[in-house]
Image (cartoon, rainbow, N blue to C red; front, side):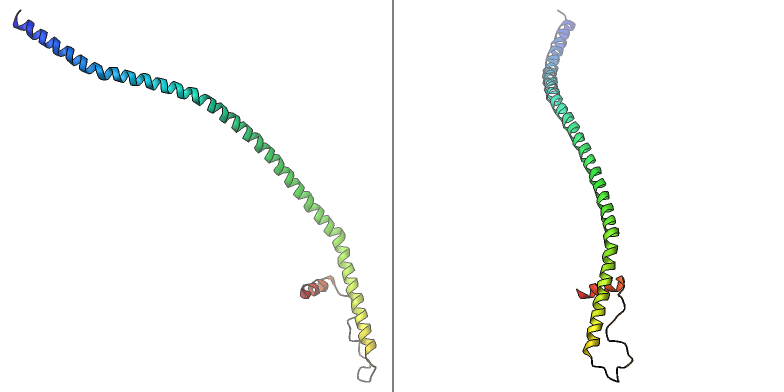
Length: 151
């Protein structure tokens, strides 16, 4: 064996040791890739039911929102109807009530004027003057103003 053959054998041995040293991390890296593949497979199996459940949940939420939208539109319609009913009631009953209140205030004023006129003795000082009470019919505005001041 010559010196070149011995150098070739040494180089081959060093190369084999080097390949062995490099092969160990590659084998470990292969195991890591296998574990990663298994973890991804398990995760994808677990995600599929979760996605199906979330799809069902979102569909049910959309159904409930549609029901709430219907309820909201019905409430808006009822509110409009109540508003119209209140306006109709105020127009049909409120006007006559104001007139009745004005009439009753005028009657009270007339009775109060008649009472104060009947209580006083006629004298020369009051001859030709009007009675003390207000015999004029009160307007609805005056009645409202009097009611506000009563409270």
